[in-house]
Structures are given as structure tokens and as C-alpha cells.
Length: 273
Ligand SMILES: C[S@@+](CC[C@H](N)C(=O)[O-])C[C@H]1O[C@@H](n2cnc3c(N)ncnc32)[C@H](O)[C@@H]1O
Image (tube, rainbow, N blue to C red; front, side, top):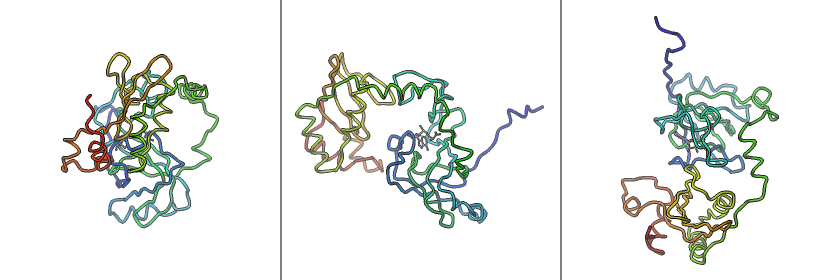
């Protein structure tokens, strides 16, 4: 006899989200509420979907229940992007690598247009299948006083002053200024924030060791070489994160900052790693 608890459930998407984020690292770990962003959830053509959206427009926020469809595996312990390099039980995190790959995001509802929901900032990549929409109800869904376990400890650590002093070499300054002037790209504030707190290797912060005291950190479509001596982080140079063979391969669509990376390599050459 079938054990009811072990029955499976087949979910079918009701629609797909359209966002500007093509690859996973472009999507933030949770939506950035301060950022002006417009995303569209397009429900599949089914007259019932349009009817099902009736009465939703009065809510300023909705929950999206969605599929981490770009992942195919899960791990019981994961390394969260926040805090020290320490693994946590996946159920104590919002990791996308879960036994049932379901994502849950409360997003601003800007408007309802027939079968389309116009949404604010979200952390879903373009094309993510969405299974369900529910209204966000502050009286039921908000508990500002609730404890947040290890995340509270991390927050507490962030209140302490940064432990490291980050210095840019003249080459790194020139490259960063060039990126800003020609491509309006500037990841220095985020880079400094990360390295000043903790420059040690960390997979989700994309920090790797290259030698005894030399490291590399990924920043979006870019990477940065740095070294650490006691409490000083010396940023040596910047580089395009994608190799030329990828950037020149037009079959690979949607590489982020592709034109800027090509121009950067043309201007500064390929880094000898
Ligand atoms: C940390 S998860 C949190 C998602 C959701 N707010 C939650 O708490 O369940 C957000 C990350 O999921 C990743 N992601 C977004 N869409 C995805 C998809 N369709 N498949 C796999 N990973 C995805 C992005 O890297 C994004 O930074």
C-alpha cells in the first residue's frame, strides 16, 4: 500500500518571470528593495488565470512561489554568502540548493494588466517558472520581533568596525576609473565592503586563493586580484571575468558586460594568471 506521506505532487508553472537578470550571479540573494526595478510575471494563456487575478490589484505585495529550475542538486549543509565561511543546515538558510527546489519571494505588486503582473525588485533570474501567487498580508506574514538565529549573530558582527584596511594600487585605480568613465561600471564600494570585513577564501563570496598571500575575488562579470598582509588588503589589478574565447563566441548569448569586458581586454591586455 502506498504511504500517503511519500506520494509525490506534480507542479506545473502558471507562468514565467521576465527580468533583466540572465545569469544567477546577477540576481541578488534577496530582492534589493531600494533599487528601482520593473519585472513582469507573464501567466500562461488560460482564461482561468486572468479570472484568478481578480481582486489582487489592491495588494501592494505578493508572495511568489517558484522553481530554482537552474539547479539540479541539493546539499544538507551549505555555505551561506553572509557571515564567516561556515556551513549551515540548508533548512536554516535560503539556499537555492534544497531537496524540493522551491523559492519564496515577497515582491512589490506595481500593477495587474490582464494576464501580466508588473512587479518590483525580485531575486529570480529571467525565465524562472512560477507555481503560485499569494497576497502578502502584513497582519499574518510579518513578525518583526522574531529571532533570526545565526543571522542575528552575523548582523551583530556587521555592527563592529571592519577589520581590514583596503588599498588600491595605482594600476587598480586607473582600471577602475576607466571602467567608470567609459562604461559607468563601478563595483568598488561593494568590493571594499566585502574585503574590509573578511578577505578569506569563501565560495559564495567568490574569493579564491592563488598563492600564499595572493587571492582573487569575482565581482559580477569582473575579477580582482589582491593580496593580504596582516590587516591590509592590497588590491593589485582588475580583470574581465570571462575568457576571450567566451567573449568572442557569439553563440553564447547574454554574457553580462560583454562589450565592456572586450574593450577592457583591448585596453589593458589579458591578465597573466
Ligand atoms: C538565495 S535565493 C533566495 C530565493 C528566495 N527569496 C527564497 O528565499 O526562497 C536567491 C538566489 O537564487 C538564485 N536563483 C534565482 N533564480 C534561480 C533559478 N531559476 N534557478 C536557480 N537559482 C536561481 C540567484 O542566484 C539568487 O541570488
